[in-house]
Amino acid sequence: MKKKWWHDKVAYQIYPKSFMDANGDGIGDLRGIISKLDYLKDLGIDIIWLSPVYQSPFVDQGYDISDYYKIAEEFGTMQEFDVLLAETKKRGMYVLMDLVINHCSDQHEWFQKALQNPYGKYAGYFYFVKGRDGKEPSNYRSYFGGSAWDPVPGTDLYYLHMFSKEQPDLNWENPELRKEIYQMINWWMEKGLAGFRIDAIINIKKDLSFPSYEPDGLDGRASCVKMVEDVQGVGEYLEDIKHHTFDQYDAFTVAEVFNMKDDELSEFIGEDGHFSSMFDFSAHILGQGENGWYDNKKPSFQAWRDTIFESQLELQRIGHVANIIENHDEPRGASRFLPEHAKNEAGKKMLATTSILLYGIPFIYQGQEIGMTNCRRKDISEYDDISTKDQYQEAIAAGCSVEQAMEYCFEYSRDNARTPMQWNDAVGAGFTQGKPWLALNPNYTDINVEEQEKREDSVLSYYKKLLALKKAPEYKETFTYGRFVPDYQKEDSVFAYHRICRENGGQDILVAANYGTKAVTLKMKSLSGKVLLSNMGKEEERGREIFSEGTLTLESCEAAVILL
Ligand code: GLC
Ligand code: CA
Image 1 (spheres, rainbow, N blue to C red):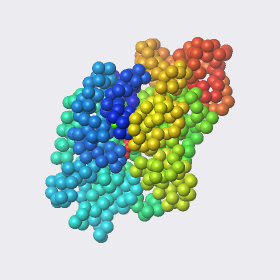
Image 2 (tube, rainbow, N blue to C red):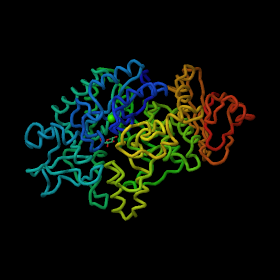
Image 3 (cartoon, rainbow, N blue to C red):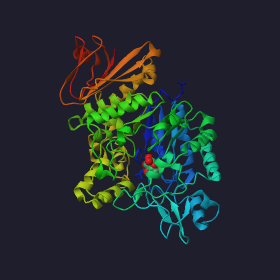
Image 4 (cartoon, rainbow, N blue to C red):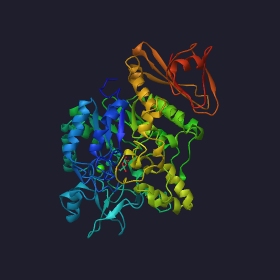
């Protein structure tokens, strides 16, 4: 594998609206982010991914862009953005923007002009399609519920939107549109970005015949995903984008890809693939129901572990994957992946250990490093997220009680990850002097940065140690390029793997954790090893305790990183 500048880096996702509010209006902003760069540097972060900061009506929290060349007023100014870039450079850090080009906002000038002249140039930037028999062109359900088609007023045309009706899909068949997007990407790259996280990218390819599918829900519609899964040829667009933009800057690109075809992996992230990397969502889609949240099945520990293992084994042969525990669309990992008895600091450190040292580049989501959790709400009106509202209604329509539907929101809502960052235990959690745009998780009085910074044994302090270990000169090569080899898979509660690096003198590092309720004893190939990191602290002491005559004993919720 050709070595790249980003292979050994650690990334951090900022959800700007909820990270840090500098001016007291309750909304996070760029100046807030700038004020926390030292915090991120100190944590061990190299790359920052900013969820969208472009001008937007925020129907889908910035994933509906009304001007690609402007910073949202709520977040600040372009000048402040430039300061942010300069300040990250000073600290040897990199910035990725979010690239949302499958769709824009209905408030974008292009769409407004298209509505004014539904047969003119700008209509060609979108999918304006004639209805069939006085109805929508096809029976697609959008991701956020309802039809994926809405009428173009005063015509018999409909426009396509796979997400909300305020997010019309852009027509990638149109060379003029493509050119505009490439110019925009290059304009941002010229500013000095390191690259992009790329939103919903395989959705850009459509089957222009827009076939209807067998209905798959109570509403008589079929998920628009069916078309995405069926249609061929997205690769041509992806190569074209890369060729006209990223390639010219050695940019780091990480794609959000769902519903990929099996044989596409190497085209996507292999040598000279369309992208530098892509997120591994295999553990996140596990147990996902056909009909939405009420239909989800909770995977067992073994299924979860084995899914990650399988994915690692496949991906490491092909390219450098990006690993996450959570992001702005997913519930908090500490609430989701830890068994009940492990929903504590030891458990959170264990989850960090087994995830961060996997093969690939870790993306830490804001608040994960202090172990932020899902947040319970009393009523659906307390949620902001567009998809949560839809999923709630879906559950009710399917016959769930209000209590059940609320429970699904508690488990799966995207707002779980979007509550403001918990900096301290003051009113506003140190996030804002004003009223936060989305209510805080009340546990900020217990879980917050300030408290954890004071404590050697906090989750935050552990994250720092873990990232420092991953980057330590003696082990860096192994953690970056070392082969991933699963171990002890027959043990029902153990999550263990090796990272073995031929280029680093055959260095073999064992990452082992016990997610069970009872201690486990594992046979080792060697008599003992050196404990590089333990979530129980005091590595040397722990090292003397856990090995005995070629065995390794891990207590419940214990994780250890061991040099063999
Ligand atoms: C991606 C984003 C999500 C957004 C959607 C539409 O999945 O991560 O937040 O709602 O795309 O842009
Ligand atoms: Ca603000």
